[in-house]
Figure: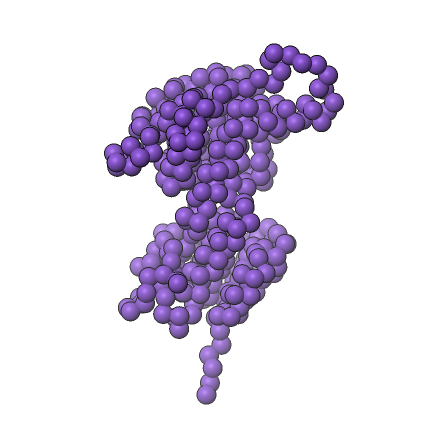
Amino acid sequence: MMTRPKPRVLVAIPVFAEVLTGLARHVEVDAPCGTDQNIEWTAEALVARLQGVAGLLVAGAPRIDAALLSACPDLRAVCSMAVGYNNIDLAACTAAGVLVSNAPDVLTETTADFGFALMMATARRITESEHFLRAGRWTHWSYDLLAGADVHGATLGVLGMGRIGQAIARRGALGFGMRVIYHNRSRLDPAVEQQLGARWVDKTTLLREADHLVIVVPYSAASHHLVGAAELALMRPTATLTNIARGGVVDDAALAQALRERRIFAAGLDVFEGEPALHPELLTLPNVVLTPHIASASLPTRRAMAELAVSNLIAVLDPGTGLLPPTALNPQVLDRPGATASLP
Ligand code: GLV
């Protein structure tokens, strides 16, 4: 009996060895990054490597657009182990009949933990204090030595009230007795608002009233520089700003200026415009806590994200499983009568 060759998958990012092994049971795997090598894919290199390839595993990079799709006619699935998918042109993929999936839900609580931690580190000047201590500058006691802003009982402003925003709001309201206000294009159901202890306000009110602003909106053309000089000018001089959304949602140059001029108290940033490069001034300011886009980075969560991406790939490329991709963003490109909705 003739056996059909397995479809090929390019794993364009480093990933857990066990996850690669699981994938290889269903498809032929090309994993040039192995478990620990990063490749800065140029469009040309990616196109060359994708010839004859049916599936692609990525994260928040590289960029997948119409030009790449038309140069890679065998591609049928682009599965990302990130929740944000602004690097993938979803409309172009749909038009080309390429299924796209992301990795929501499994990272919600881990990312909310990190957002809250970054906000607290920012308010209480944790990294600045450590630098002070390591530099041998702790020689005296003073009533205002590295004094910061209170978190408990303060007003938490959440910009973007999706799953992660809601998980942060819950932490603030239930764990820290915070007054929680939020702004989102669509309001939550009043019952959910009540459960979270959160009140919808317009964006101006949010910026004016928040003691601690946490930004969790997806990046799109509409959210580009959602917080720039004009918005920063509305904030309290005692307020903090934490960005765990995407670089580009905040205008980093305007933020650096506001921090330098102490027009806001401090910022906590996990994401940057043009990352991994940073606006150079951010590196020189004491009142900013900087982390390298790691909000979802606990090992169990990163593992769950990778497994989810692989589950999507297998469901698309191995129809023998009879399963539908669990977190497809454009499930309409698949025509699978009789398939079940998710992997067991
Ligand atoms: C991380 O930023 C993600 O989108 O998962």
